[in-house]
Every structure is written in C-alpha cells, then in structure tokens.
Length: 236
Figure 1 (cartoon, rainbow, N blue to C red):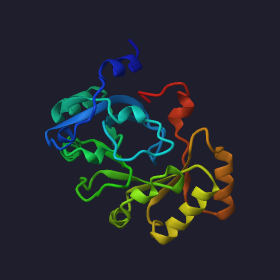
Figure 2: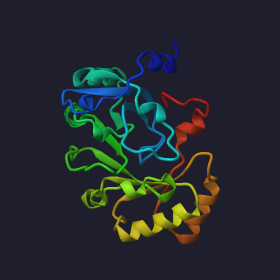
Figure 3: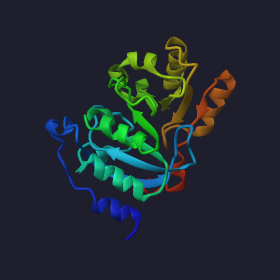
C-alpha cells in the first residue's frame, strides 16, 4: 500500500463540531505524512506534516478544502507517536487553520519538549500569543485576491519574532502591489518574507520579474511539492 492509500485509510468524513475543537487533550487530524517541505526557509528538507481539521476562512485559491471537515480524533500522545515513527526532526503543524483547535498548544509544547524543530503555519486571523516561543511561526498574510484579507488580525504582525516568517500568496499585479505596501506599512522588513504565486494562476517568471524590477528583499516561493508531485493532492 502506498503512502497516499495509507493516508486515505486513516481519514474519515467528519463534520467538525465546535466542541471537538475546544478539547485541550485531543485533536481532529486530517492527515499526518512525511514529505519534502515545499515552502518556507526549510524548503527542500524532509519534514513530517501534521494537518489538522477545520478552517475558519474560505480562501478563493484554497488547495486543501478536504481539510475543512475530514478528520479523526487523536490524543496528543498518539500524534507524537506517529511523528516519531518517521525519524525526522523537522515537523510542521498546518491545516486548515491549526489555531482553531485548543489542543494544538499542548501538541506544540510536546513536540518542542521532544526535541523537534517545529514550524506552525497559520492564516493570520487567529491570535498567535499562545504559540510556544521556540516554534517558528509562518503567518500567511491574506491578499485581496484571497477574498479573506478583511479577516486578518493585524496585531499578530507586531508579535512576530525575528525568526518567524511571513507569506503572501499572490495571484495578480493587484495582490503584488498590495503586498509591497503591506511590507512597509506593517514594518515586516525584519522577517523573512515569501512571495508565493498561486499555482496555475500566475506564472512564476512574471512574479520574479516584478520582484527584481522593484529590488524587493523577499524570497520567491514556488511550492516545490506541487512540482515534484503535480498529480497528487494529499500526502505531499
């Protein structure tokens, strides 16, 4: 059985109840898998991904809509056990939106205590204060093209440490211009900033040209997993 089949066998349809998201000792997990990190400053590195169920936003370009409701309940200990089996010290907690689940904070603490390098990707709409400070936060700043920019909690950007990272997912020139403005307006220069073209929507070379023309201190991010496994939607 290949990894994608294993992932599918471990996932069942689940209409996410709000009570389940408030449980501190367990989590609704969409999938746990081992792959190549396709984004962030760790792109290209082997990584274990923990994708949690549920999201409070509905971005126009979302490529993980299956995580809105699909999932099964795990204890924190069971999640850590599955992660340990992959024998990889880099772990990313993602979603959906992981911060809508109360149990995520205990999971992050356990992973850090167990010696893992932990990344957490969040959509920027939820407060990031309670995230273990040893985790690297990757905050997705929602551009106008996402139709969710009005949901951003802008106070989060003032709470970033220099080791945290910021991502802008860009679909057109309007998104690009807006993102450039936000970098200056929100004083994000101290953080590593990623400009990520929406896959299949805008050509990477176009975004690269704009970045070079404006001499922006940002990193072009191409979601390498989509180029390595273009026909796979899960487990990458």
